[in-house]
Length: 295
Image (tube, rainbow, N blue to C red):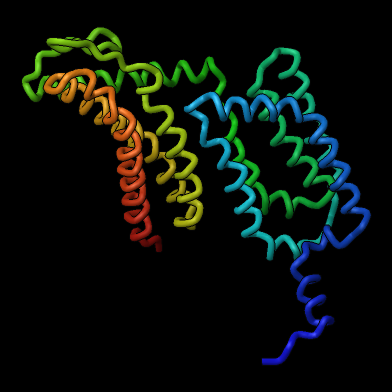
């Protein structure tokens, strides 16, 4: 084995560095933009991290930037060979994002403030680098939307129908087992107790997490757009049906073993087990799609 000369080592390191990081002016501009973003979005991301910590439905938010950075790293070989071709249209995209940020601040609407970051960072990439850079980084940037909690108005409109669906399926399952049951909205009345299908039991947490996982899974396992779309769309019925089965199992346990058993260890552990089951179903759909040959 021959030792690598210092010159060869420097050549290897230089080829692994993207072109735009080799130019001092471009590097200075990027550094300036990073500082400006930190100042503009410090309070926005401070509140966002607070939500990740205190809102269980969005605790997966910590993982989303890490996955996005991994997706960018995977494109490092392509990025390092792209020529720099700044586009002034990026300024308009940045201004559009800043407009969203201002409107969100004035209206105290957190989703708008956070969503504006995606436009601002896209505009900066377009203005400093090129359309090609933005195209290559579009998926990692778009994926960041999963780190932003859904607006409360939309969240309520999604969760309540899911609560009703889960309670209907649970009621039907219990009736099929000849268990006396009465449903009033999202409340299931059994002989000795009542179960309320609350927001936490609506399945929204599993749905959002499965969608975030499904997007990445579809991206890596499927090469054709319609297959990716089908796999992502399949996450909706999978998450909803699996959660309905969980509520049904909770009702059966409450009937035969009491509410303390149904809402104790099983309630938390079943969520983990059924999420694995949901992923297994998603994996099966992906496997089936992979076997479809397109001529």
